[in-house]
Image (tube, rainbow over all chains, first blue to last red; front, side, top):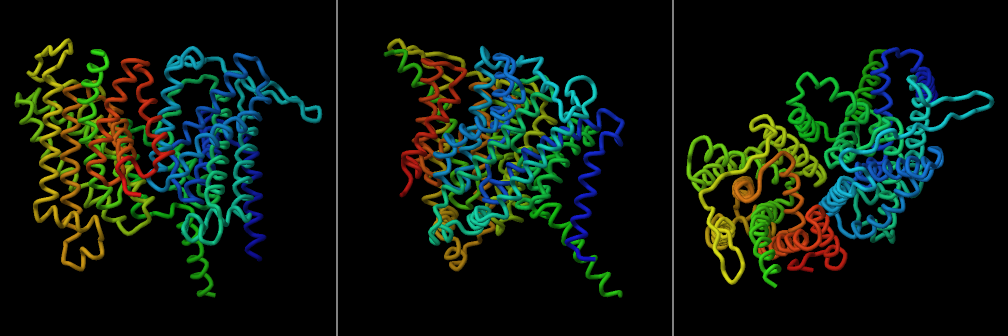
Length: 327
Length: 285
């Protein structure tokens, strides 16, 4: 059979499975982890855009996630806006913020850029923690509302209550949307320019590409996705404090991209699930978690610099070649 | 006016520590091109070790610091050999990600070995002099002096010795240095040992001056990089000037604006410098 058709069938089966998952999984905790992992997929796709495509490591992803989470929460809690409105507005707002901060930081390259974005994340975290008259400080904001019920062709979809099925579908659709946006960007002219910048920025510039525009574009889209993920996170958990938006979460996003395979579309998906589920299974050694995590990151970078997905693809092609020989 | 001088003096002591951190970072960056982000955590490791040596073993503060610096140098050697050397020829981004992983590992190791409690190293230097209305704490003066001595030793080492000559040669042109028979592997080990020892001294001084706690190390590494950006990457005079500017401006911000936002102000200074002079105050264009 044509391999293209085969992979489309595989993808379709995966999608059907994903939508049917709430009917198959009966353990609520497992469902909870899957929802978190899908939110992380959005975050990691954003991170991949700037880290994997352009080759600029941004350490501000969790900061932008925090901006999105607080923006959407404050609008819905303090001003009483509908969550559907705030979910749409959040990516726009984070995008706007990221244009303002991205412009100066993209004047610098390589390590400088990483350090400046790291400083942004620290500033965002400090402000969230200290400006407590608005953000609630460390005590945070409780009772963040879920989206109100929605009626689709006569069906009433309820997002509140104990069953997370409806929210799962919402998050799944959002993760698909994020992956779709990244796929469109990767396969467009813009995507090719982004990859060209990663491979040789001076050459790209010499070819007449004004690289900073493309870099800013990637940074801004990445921040928008992070903000969106933040809003989804806040309305899902229902409680918000600055803790999940520190630098270590940004490092986690980097780890997700590296583990999965940077510069690929499937990589961040695999990586997001890995960073959500790995800590759960490493819980046995809770005090060793940080050391184990760092060790995995170092070892993965040394021995598996391209990530899991490209390695799996290689193995698959090799297996196919072997099968072909035997025939 | 005395208030301003007082804050400036406090800032100078902290700035001296920032300079020590930045010096270690700048040597590694200038010579190997690695943004060694785990440096702050290594410094904290040294701070904890100094605490253990002086508090549990009863060693005098400076002896404990010296011993911790030796241990730090060994840790630096291990880090270079085991983590950075395998990715030396890979893209820079890989070395940076290794650095992030090392940060997690060192932070985790600190937590496991020394616990999550905040630690203050007790020193016998508690005197306070009063000069023209300004209170001068003995400890702060000692911190500044220690930093000056260490900076002087490093400057001599780099400008006067044969090892220093080979370090400078590698910094200027790696290929040419290799052709001249410089052992690059040895240089890079030496550089990491020196840099980590300097970081440890900064960690010990911070422990005596303020406190050591989990998470302080990352903040310290970011401050160190802020200093490098202020002064210019790879420039030793830049590290000194940048460290003092950052320390003093932070102390001023804490004294006159708000101590909660002092870190924010330090980063704002860095961002403004990047906007108008991306190569740093003393960097080459």
